[in-house]
Length: 496
Image (cartoon, rainbow, N blue to C red; front, side, top):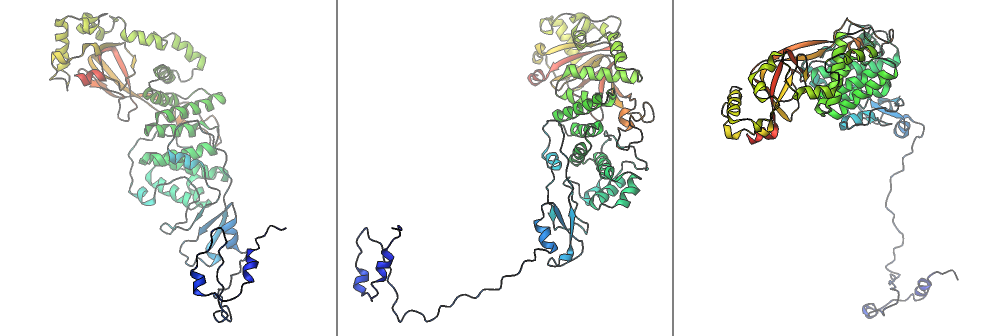
């Protein structure tokens, strides 16, 4: 009635010794196998159980138990103390809550995404040269690496305006690195001055990020600026700083989106876009071949250097009065008819090929153009039959007109001059901090009026491809006499 198997009880009734013949006899199929029971003489008088050690008691009130189970606690080993069984060698420190990360939707390196999310419980028992292990998830370079480093790059990021005399350098990076790994209020006060405790940790990461960029630790600097962006939401300087570092890491798309994020923060506050932000965004978009946006940002930034006190409406009216007031007019001027008031447009190549394609020109004109090509370094051995005339075109620049070079063309300057200019922030001139009295405000380095610095001049004969300048941030602008260039596609160069 209970559904139990009663075969066990039926086998218990046959408690007699079984012969060897019965044991060897094959059992019928379909029956349950019954195991033979031991004889009375074979049964041990007393069963010996294996010895077992005593179960240790667990102290549910001790510090070690809480250090292991508490979800928000962090266990750090005190440097120089041995013996892990002693609970006095542990320190319990609560990990603060992390605010929500607000970043542009972009493809960033894995180190940045790892730095943006910190685990709730960090347990570390590793000791590095006697220093306490940092609780921050932001990857920092090792102390030995910093000691061996030196200045390798020009700093593009903006350093905060502090009450103390702290400047980006290798020595400053070492002090900031120690302050982040061993948080002490007095050390931070000596570095940053008397600032509130909430801003202290953010300023330490901000300053160290600028120093690391200067020393060439670009990925670590980008991770620190990403942390600053998540902690100080709405401040455009952090998105700008991360954008310039990603720009140097050749993360063009991510850098462009960071500059867009910084621009949106400025517009939300009712500010006019800083000229340095426009110039850096134009560099990122130039690599992405967003030429209309590049031309607009470059021209607006250049107008800001000429008219620093103009409002946005005044700048728009000034641009409308320019000879080339739109990207469409700029494109037409590149391949349009020559302007005779510019000396470079009176070159014989321009006069012979005005309005005519090079593949349709006469053989005499093509032969003369080949002699001009052979005078350029690197083209001395070019033969007449190797020149792909369908891949060659003429570009004419008016005085003061920029050239937006790409890596899909090789340019050969045959008349005029090209000036290599770069935007440089001018400290001590221009507008003051828009948030005076606040340490975390936008620094003057970003808001001040920049100036155009002439790095060098390209003269005839010169050839180049892509961005120019010592730091790859130069802009090519025709001199007052204009410029004339031959433009050859990369496919045409491969055919040559």
